[in-house]
Image 1: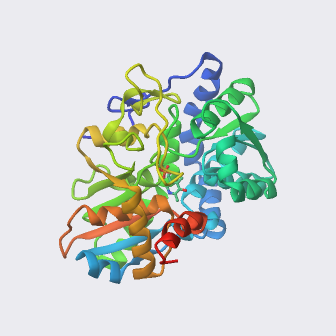
Image 2: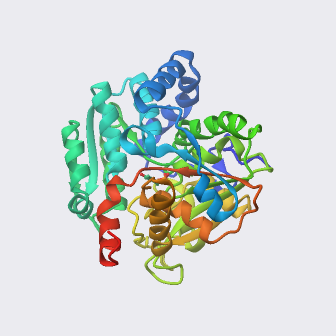
Image 3: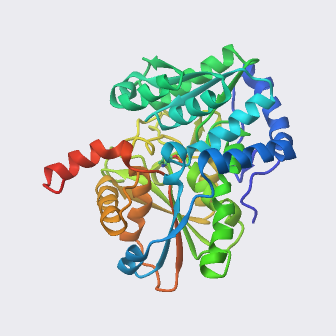
Length: 397
Ligand SMILES: *Cc1c(COP(=O)(O)O)cnc(C)c1O
């Protein structure tokens, strides 16, 4: 079984490019160009240089001794939280801005929910001197003031979106609309392994630097280049795709994806798309979608703004359907507890998204010799208000 994308842009039955006619030539150009450009030595050299000197890679693979003692396994944390801008998203935006420049594009658009992908996009546009427009729902703008200010300071224009629930899904629709009107000069930087082919594969390849490094770093730590388990959280699925990438076809390695259960998978306040979603098309891709009986998209809920996407990358839809990846749903409460636990055991305040991956230790038992690598996708600075609200009430903060 090959879990990579096939030549038609599908992972098993999932993926494809379901797009309006006006975007055909744009997506087609991207499809025919992306692999060629990414494999050019000069492109690779520039990407590698920026990864090292600008992002700060390789990110450390840290043996978490006290966390390991607590859960009786050999637990390593892949420290994407230490990257410039505080998460894994910069790996992808650096790759896509270089690709956009290579294709002669001068204008960048992006969508953002919590603002993390917006900041990562605005950052690389400042770096390259490119015009940047970020679509963001009005509800999210009100909730994420600091990220809005960061984007503005970086020189991006944040365009408020007032349709629908005024959140991520609506911002994405608006970005696609913009792209339809400006197909020749504009590149759309999608922030996860979602959207029409070739985006899921392109983003997975840019993020695959995570597993490329894990392979080398595990040799130094454990004398072998593979772990027994890989654990990552999934919103759209890009940090998980990067973590799994070089191990997807290696059946010595078990894959665990943590999705956001919100208040619980038996409530309607949840974002557990793989567990509860039905097959459908969202943002140009055939995958699992949170939807009503008659196909209306259901607004997902999670305490973590980075995990409440109503779809899931087609790569993960396939890994889950084939039984290759185990999918665990982690609730708000479990994630919040795991965040405090990591902070107190290791002195690392994780992003709420990453805390969902950490929540796996409360649900699954590992053996004392199991080597578990968990990707810490981001740092918790942006989530301090949520932590204070939760732990302030309990008298802990
Ligand atoms: C955006 C984000 C995520 C979720 O996105 P994926 O594409 O699923 O990786 C996870 N962690 C952090 C820190 C994020 O900012």
